[in-house]
Length: 343
Ligand code: KG4
Ligand code: ZN
Image (cartoon, rainbow, N blue to C red; front, side, top):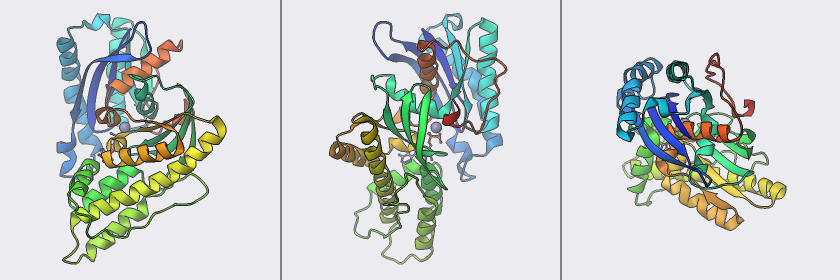
């Protein structure tokens, strides 16, 4: 079974061809291309929806043709077409889903409308048989959620941010530090240069709170204040490290509570990280330590599969097909605010 996946929910135009393994569990990513629009948005300090839509239109067909050519596969041999239909920017979602729908109509094959968050979570199962239920920390540019994944299509949100998402906090802080967009990788790189001589005391919002929610908007404000009152000893690398440290400690505290709750309910299982911020090496190392302490099994996908990509979209369609689903109506409209609760 061969599925073409399309991802256009934000500022990456991505296409991938994924095949289900015949005998064993999992799948093989035959070919994937991710075209980042970051350079086009950088001067504006964030994603400009109109520019993003235009770039998707300009490159989607070309990328798809390249994928087919390089993998030496005829479009008629593809069994289903899948596209992200939310959450995300409406323009991009319309472009990607209409493209997949056209292929599906033209070739008389099923169309799958994919939830971006479900795709971020399920992509971990392409290479590894991770049984349900498992606990997942979903951290991206727009979302910060602790979720119990009960089945391929059943997710319970047990905690989420009350203000900014973690990725958003990284991006805004990077802007304050004059690092450009996207901020996550730039902060991580700068933090590595810190000699940790002048660690700045930043707040740890929500730490020790009984519920499982997160908050990050105060952190970036604290960084802004620090930058405004900077003295000659203060280095941006120390500030970047201090920010990353504060974010990690907040996430670790919330996840530690979440793991306790999960273990009480299920006794054992996997703890996963998903979404763009999950590619952060420092955070991954800290989460491994936490899981070792709590006797949970840690897993996070390759960094390239944490950030937006289309392999996760194609793979989610495969999981749905394996579970007997036949596809979605061509009339399915993208939903920019499609919650993972509504699957
Ligand atoms: O999942 P993703 O690619 O797109 C969304 O669905 O939002 O996540 C993008 C977010 C951005 O905010 C970006 O700054 C952040 O992930 N990010 C990182 C790193 N790489 C990407 N944050 C921290 N450290 C990184 N290495
Ligand atoms: Zn994403």
